Length: 355
Image (cartoon, rainbow, N blue to C red; front, side, top):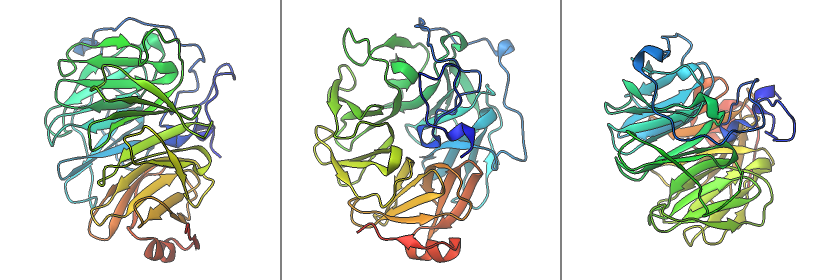
């Protein structure tokens, strides 16, 4: 497996990136100690290195994707931001992105306003649907990569990352304050994905089988332990009000009570899982390492595995044109069918029923 997808461990001294689904993609020089840093102001424009136009922007590593209204948005290496206005048929690189760091996460509040986060504690913001971005936060000295961003509205949001690094804004990213999730906590768990359920409960998928949970818009959090002891790389809210979290070795857990309790479901795989989406037809699709794509037509209780012929790592997935999904990862963006039977025939690999 390529070194960028090895499982991250804090005990290895200087470490290489771990697990594509984690969306860490930490640079080879990242050290295992993180300095506690005060919130830092954004750099001036003169000090910023802008992402450069590239014909390979759709073919380089992409680590996160989301929707901005009907627009599809994906982010990844070298500060690349790409978007599609035709359901993934064609892609355009953003005109102005004030960073060259690897971007690991992206979240849109509406079709215009969005935030993305990445290496060097970097957060960028757009107000025009992802074409032009401004630098919202940057603190290279903190050595804490942002792995997830989440905004409940245009003003209030979080960016979280390695070793329990958390910053929060109440003014749309103009200023940020560093905080902990638990009062007086000395936790240093990696915070890999923050998202909200349909009912507004904020959940954070973390390592060591942990989920952090807030029912008061993020003012306070409680720690929920699952039956799994490994890392959860991602999570998602479902339209029926339930939630999924997923991570190492194919572990997928489901909650029907806003994350208070979790039960393991059948992912149909032992491959690590990093991203997912619920399609408009109700199918849930998960993606992960070694070409894993899992389809569920029973609300996430069982998944059918289809292994892509390229056997590469994938971190995100979005609904594309009718009958298609867009998967994002090591080779950039790829398209495939949105159902397991058709995908298995097209990709050329057998599929395994998760039922």
